[in-house]
Length: 271
Ligand code: GLN
View 1: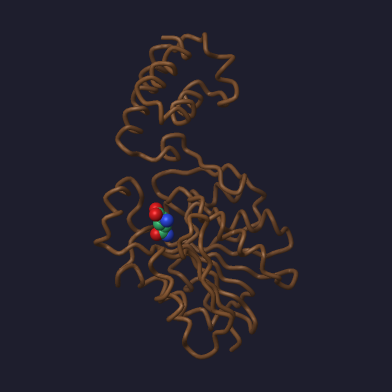
View 2 (view 1 turned 60 degrees about the vertical axis):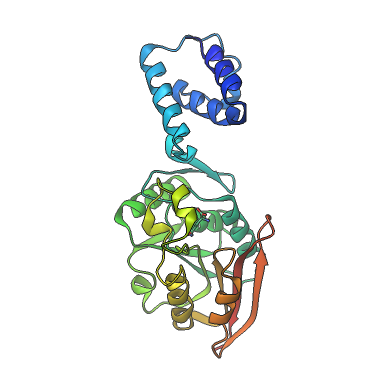
């Protein structure tokens, strides 16, 4: 079959999935989406056709495009993604923007907890070449993905393996950021997230356990005047602000994402 014919067939049967069809076809042909037009008369060989049909079926099954294509674009950076990590979400680009808007001393020491693919840490290191960024990841498989991405994008992030603060036990930072698991075990949205690593999504205590652990450990790792910036569920704003009611925290604030949901909370540690 010619590639242009396949695209037209999909456009008729699933008009809402045109971009996905183009991305997967480009993946199979090994070209960019922009080059597909010129390739539309190209015959798919049997292998390519088989691969394309398999990918299209998995897409129809709800598997995220990032897993099918093996990459995601995050803050303009192409990151390798596999099922060991969560594909970074557009909201998390907003978390990066919030971190970059903070005025930190140069060179700032920054910690990204639960880095997954390395997305946040790499985006910060790229945007602020003088920041010293450390990323922590517990899962070995995820740390492999992060290490690859760090190497491809300049190698400026120090990656440590371990549980939250454990590998940075004696270190202090000007900024700690995290997009931890925050979905409660019984949340209905988990039904839509069956391809993602559960450990990256689900936390005990109605999704609050890891957020709680990160906030309570932060004072030992923040310099006076340092900030903690967290992504959380859209209904967790009040609960996260309550965690910051412990003495020593100031400038507690929640910021909505572009969909208007309370998605990020931050506070400053005055010690
Ligand atoms: N926002 C993500 C999702 O809905 C969840 C990310 C997380 O738990 N950190 O898929």
